[in-house]
Amino acid sequence: MRIRKSLPALICISLLLVGCVSQSEFDQVQNEKRSTEEKLVNIEKDLELVRKNVERQANELNKISVENLQLKEKIALYRSAINPNSYSNNYNTNVEEEQK
Image (cartoon, rainbow, N blue to C red; front, side):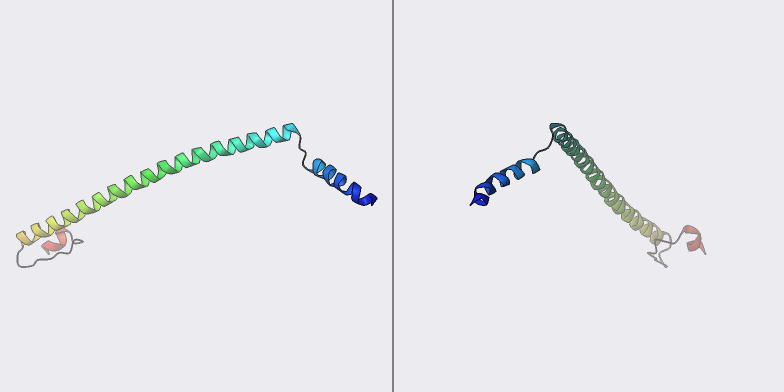
């Protein structure tokens, strides 16, 4: 009977002792949390900037690829106009190779 009466008191005391932290420790954890949140916000901003740069570069690359294809087509037309008997669409040949 004595143990039953003292059990709730022992539980309350143990919970109070285990759950206590000093104010300075609490403040330190709060400051670390705040600092980590600020770092996260900065990293998210940097990530968004990098994504925009990658998208811009991908668009530039696509535009350059289209221009390159158009130039290759023009070269093929000029080559066929110069030498109509031997039409070649090999874009990797140069002028010296074609003159041989």
